[in-house]
Image (cartoon, rainbow, N blue to C red; front, side, top):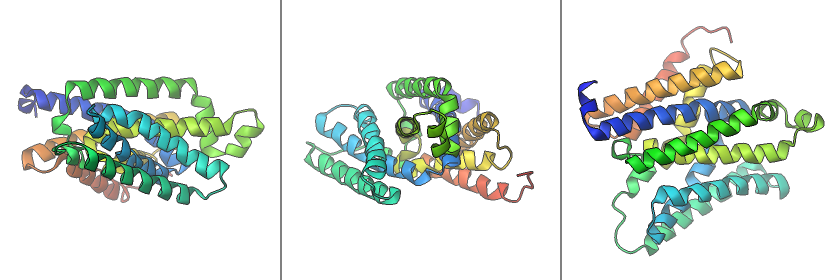
Length: 266
């Protein structure tokens, strides 16, 4: 393992794996507790529209994906909360529209998009220094926001109506939480891709929740689990010459399956 760190691309990949693990631990805990897994999937797929827009405008797709993912998150929240449409319907609409826009934007872009698959299925071995800086900044925003609104997020994760009754603006906090999910999607795109983001956002926290129900311990354990398993998947993909995104997710899925045989107090 130490030998391969002599390569610059492996150093970048390792840093990306660590940053992804931090995102998984923090935001993934809320995703699992509040049971918004499929909302996360809807946001991630809708973000493809931002990727396509980046190709069309000739800018880094990650940059254009940030506002697009936030708009998708807010859109899901508005459609489900204010238009009296069921949440799964809102997810389906934004999911399909975002993917469709991405396809159209890519088709309208001049030339050929050679690295499009890396955004769909991940390519952690091609993470650049710019990608790392972007991931680091987004992680900083996520951590700062969670620290600032920790009490509010904790309250709405378990009971939105009670939160509203004690003076917490639950709807605004819900929208803010969805925006954090959107930023997490952007962080994870280069690691496992849009298609597989939902696995990194949920599996580490799902494994960790079997061992603790304390939210702070859950975040810490989820972060450690996410980092360790992502790095393990990265290493396996390198030595076996397999796609990195798929290998990381398979490692996560295997560990979740094995954890089901472990007796826990919960």
